[in-house]
Length: 142
Image: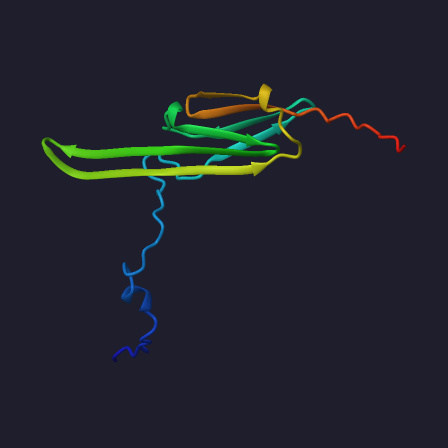
């Protein structure tokens, strides 16, 4: 007995247009590559915020941190190259150059003069002291 299947011409429409539309390049998790997102931990005490951001494989010179009030931006230039060789013959060569960034707002403004950043073993550590609340002054009307 023969199997009867129904054919839908629109079922494989994705295959028809595959490769026609450009999609943003995404670094896939493979062989220790964690992707393009900056993963962070943010802790707070009464005096400061402490931020740990994972930036594995990024050089210290390629990291930029900016603080504007309570807005913090971390960006880094990512350069990854991988080449698999078998003897003198190159079997596969992969390169990725791009920029990753993360911007977030804190609950209080940061004292920019006391802020510090340290990068070690792929982890960026930011110490962001809280700005003391400006003393409120009451004006007398004359």
